[in-house]
Image (cartoon, rainbow, N blue to C red; front, side, top):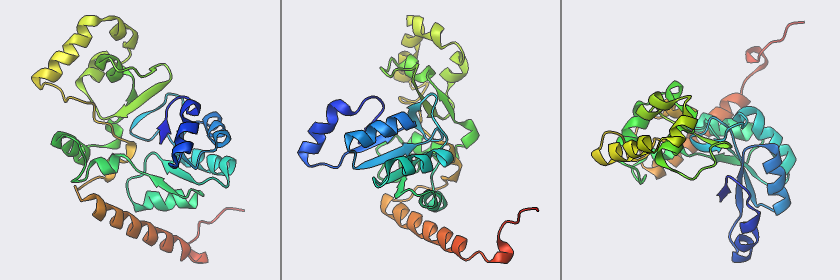
Length: 238
């Protein structure tokens, strides 16, 4: 699976290996390139997603069907703001073949994250997430921050440097302070990547149990939607 930047230098090598080529896209230009490259699966990532994505990306709900139409018959997965079976059902209703879910799977017993991350996700709220480049700059990460930001939970350095990213990039002392604070345990070693659907995370199941739950919830949501009778359907005014 390739995400962020130009996938073309790697596509042929992946295809020759016999592996499935998945390409995550954040706008229609990227989606078109993924189709031209012959991607086997395309992931349409909305800005609600946790972690890195396009600074000027699209919201999941309107973006997914556009990519579905553009990429057909290539299967499309919806990503961003999906943390339960209702979100999976919504993705299917939009024409996606399924959903790629990140934040929810960080809060599972098998996830290779610090226990503090799982705790933060269970206690977190969507309104506390923020797309930013501050933490990438402070960490000295090599992300192209003018193009891609990352959605995270709140962080002391966000509050300190929000709106002063250019100043932070020039301040070597501030970036050393970040490393020192990590070493002392004052701040977590990594930002907590979290999408807007983090409110829906309330427990720490196994990944297998979570998959079973997601499938059951999606089936129930689709069944209920299919059973809506005329008396329960939305009405329009004349």
